[in-house]
Image 1 (cartoon, rainbow, N blue to C red):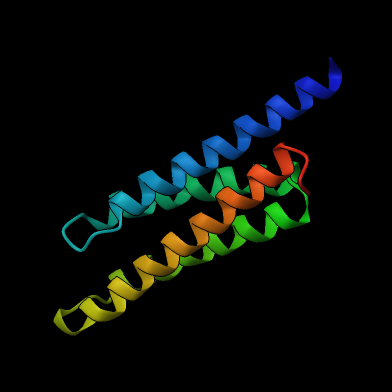
Image 2 (image 1 turned 45 degrees about the horizontal axis):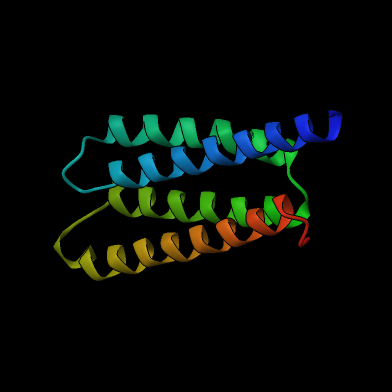
Length: 114
């Protein structure tokens, strides 16, 4: 039972981080105010800290890549201009790729593959 509780707590942390990542990614648009973007980043960072405490090395690395991708998008938006569109699209794809790695890594950890 203890192992099941630990796994469920881990699953909840991973899910909360993923949800915060997705919410923040939706906020990271040139049309949204910087304050909204910063608020989303703060939430994602707080939940990243929990993943850092909970997860194994592979999960921490995947979550860190997601966090870094979000921070890079936010930094780009802080100085966004018309010529930034291609870079913005590239950074969004990097976020999507990081999310895919996180999902496969957490799935492997939670289902005994890692």
